[in-house]
Image 1 (cartoon, rainbow, N blue to C red):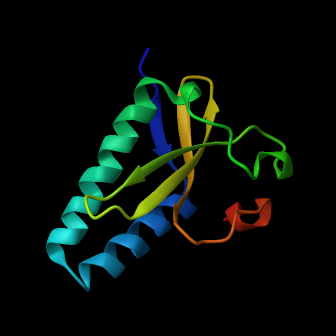
Image 2: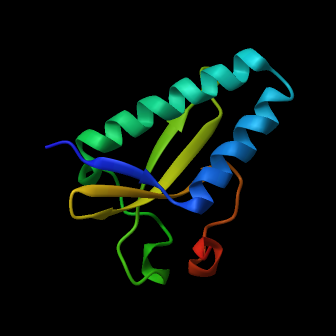
Image 3: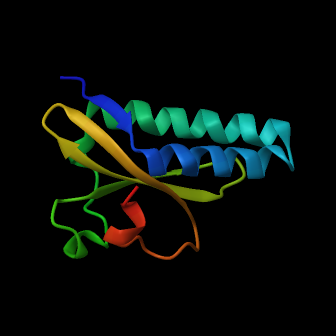
Amino acid sequence: MTFAVEMSHRAKQNLADITTWILDRSAIGASRWLQAFEKAIERLAVSPLSFSVADEAPDFSEPIRQIFFHTPKGRNYRIVFRVDGSSVIVLSIRGSGQAPIRPRDLSD
């Protein structure tokens, strides 16, 4: 079964912010980052329940999970998501060193 992957408003903003930040420094770097992100999204669509529960999960009313991915240069990122039936809802995209998310961070 393939899951539909949807992006929350917050995740779309994270995607735009990260891409813009990298693009301002390197067009090639931004392209590579997007490729790594897209591969992670493809993996999510196939088996979202195989990824670990996010450290922040106890603070949320619904289970949240995370998938890690990295760029060719080795910078780590994670996608925080929840599974809702046959859909995966991407809640946030986080870079290494960012504080854990809180429920109020995800309110649009």
